[in-house]
Length: 135
Image 1 (tube, rainbow, N blue to C red):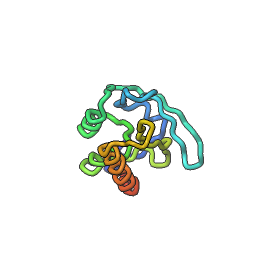
Image 2 (cartoon, rainbow, N blue to C red; image 1 turned 90 degrees about the vertical axis):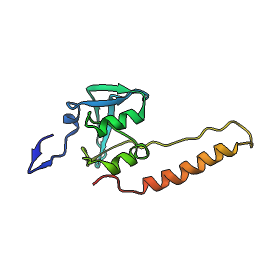
Image 3 (cartoon, helix red, strand yellow; image 1 turned 120 degrees about the vertical axis):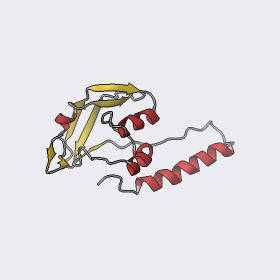
Image 4 (cartoon, rainbow, N blue to C red; image 1 turned 60 degrees about the vertical axis):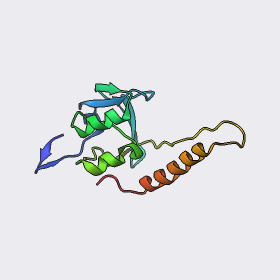
């Protein structure tokens, strides 16, 4: 990124691949991302990984401490985004959206703990998804 009048400029998807990427190894392809423009154009970018971890907590800490750039879901990043300066690197591009799923055993007997967890995520995910997280 280039400094321009004291502010960081926005990036292109090609330039993104030249920066230190922090990968989440739990993902099927943690170094390859397909971005979609506002016009519906898709662009796949292969990142150069500086580090890979299997822990979202460590990944967030590394990003907050300036260790590199990454992609995090809104729910995981909410607290970190509120406490650090952030830069939306590709404001005209988006990644595919995903979901959170609870898988229960067959039958009608779902434990109170499982019902409570599902209710919490429904309320919390709905609340977080309504917030404008980035400038």
